[in-house]
Image (tube, rainbow, N blue to C red; front, side):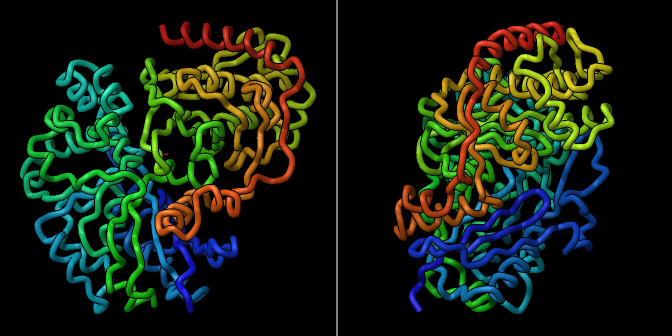
Length: 517
Ligand code: XUL
């Protein structure tokens, strides 16, 4: 049988998922997912990371990611003929790092099916656990890195983001300061994405510009490591980092281990892996400028392909490489679903009542508004004990519900204006995107039609699409047309809403300025 399939892998915070697509027929052949907490309880990580980290530390065991990868491939091999896979790519949760010793390269070259990947790679870890994106322990290291290069404006202009706690550079610096001897013994530092890609090709894989930009180490304009940022981070770092490549680079051929164990062919091309957000951009069909993706999850994220490589003068947003070329932007809002849920609970409503409240109140809410932050927020950086209500009391429940959602989207609009995007349509995804009333407010605030995608796993789909496009199985446009179609119908902005929200933007900006004093 001809090799007509492409495989995409997504190693995320809580699970490893994969999808096999057949570009020529536009079909999804098979899918599988393994939840770390449920399927691999021995790792003691019910939510995908080791609980009870101190001082903001959040770590995971990288061997768990390997065991999950094997379980996913095992499940897929029972659902389809993996011998028909021609190309593979993947994505990892961003920012997380894996520390490897001098045995790494040799072990990769000699992977054998007599033992699992995890038991062979275990001896290669110089640091047993990996800090992941939820880790906030590096405030001091961020300040030190920024100071060393002349301030955060310099870090941002070079790397696309100010020194950021969860980013890999500050995490590496903290490790170096805490344990200089083990840092010295570390020969290679990989991201989650490049670690898994290396294992698949049985050789050290590059880091792509999409995921590499989440490290505060990559010079975005040059597409390569920045010597000054590396020096500010830790000594001898240049030797410990793999090379950087664009998202279209091929990392190598799939290692024999996988052919022997799971039935893959002998000539499978593996394209360099990327971060989960860059991969999702592709999976959502938004890799060209014009479409904006808003993902409403535990935290809300806003991302889009960028026409120009700008950076956020306020220092809250990020710029990453776009796996399809150029750059993409990402802005993360901590107060997403958790804030909506807190308001709903305080109003003693279920989601139906919450939606009815949104529908019974007009755009602009008669001037009643809210800064809907419970605890820390990173866009903008504020730490409020409770939301700020303006012209509103908690008794006015329908208006409170609207003020919460309007406050979130208006803040999102304010925080993303620096991107200078010409938004033709907004693609809404994530749990809350199904809520019609919430989607309507997004359309009104951004004055753009909102569409929703049928895609569930946009990260793994993006990886499969990249693999297929990279191997020349179809063009990116053809793949997006076949696999990334929005659900029929769009939600149009309400007439006159745009003017109302211009005023609300001024009010919310004033509340933010006051709260920041
Ligand atoms: C992005 C970020 C998260 C992780 C995990 O900057 O920290 O979205 O990529 O999904």
